[in-house]
Image 1 (cartoon, rainbow, N blue to C red):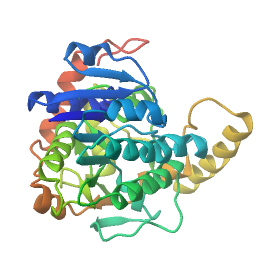
Image 2: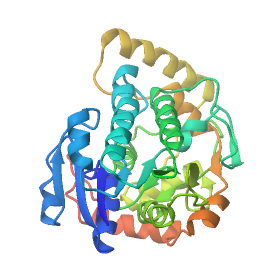
Image 3: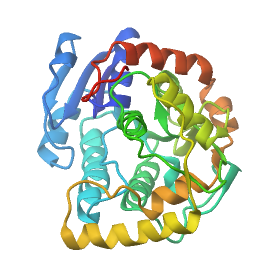
Image 4: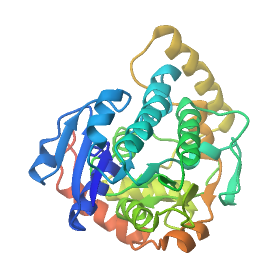
Amino acid sequence: MKALVTGGGGFLGGAIVRLLLAKGAAVRSLGRGEYPELKKLGVECVQGDVADAEAAAGACRGCDVIFHAAAKVGMWGRYADFYRTNVTGTSRLLAAAQAAGAARFIFTSTPSVIFPGGDVDGWDEAAPYPAKFDSCYAQTKALAEQLVLAANSPRFSTVSLRPHLVWGPGHDHMIATIAARGRAGRLRRIGAFNKLIDTTYIDDAANAHWLAAEKLAPGAACAGKAYFISQGDPRPNWDIINMILEAAGTGPVIKTIPYMAALAAASVMEPAWRVLRAAGEPPLTRFVLQQLTTAHWFDISAARRDLGYAPAVNIEQGMKNLAEWFKTQPAPAGGGTV
């Protein structure tokens, strides 16, 4: 196998790269930055923007399978920026992959593409895209996923994977944000909400991509389809957050804020950030508030059936692994143990 991984320098992309190398594949990575750690592993690194047609063409040349994990991720930002990376970038990569003669295309999507703004309790892949999206990220990933699935053909097999809240050892933005805000005492529970959510351990998320590549072929059960990926073990939201904080050496979130107060704060912060053109994301947005107060867990029966997917690391063991990783990291600024 000669594989291209876009976003190979990222959290999930890097895990996919390492798994492919362990399986004996030759790996090329396309990313905007320089990643000497990948070069040390023997990865051929191509620096470029996935939305640049020339860069996409060069990266795909000679590859028979494409893992498209690169994306603009976040709950805040300009729609045009999300569209360029997530939609234009995917369109350019699909065209480049087909022109290069690649046979398989595995796309990293997200369950956010079907999030309706309310509770999602055990939904499967029959769930439709919503009429209205709550974030630029979700909307542009949904558009990109539709491009990928529509490109499936007898000569070019595609599949879309929707791993939910990927976490584990390593430099992950979600884990880093939770740990930093927990240490700073900036996390608050929202009212009495503590609904069930799915998560995906990093090694299992990467393995789902490998299994999809193994199964993907013209006429395969998974060709042209999307799949939810998780541990298949939904837990209460704040239980998961507190387990992450414990792994990071930080105490649990105890303080609460009423839902209406949180909604009012988010409703004020969002326009203020836009008017002031403030850097970074607001401390709280309405989308994040929805994520913290609604259930979002999924039926992964289709992935088990069509991909042979079976989570190998349970949440407790994953948290132990995360805690061991935190112990290897420098102490945060201002002291404290990690």
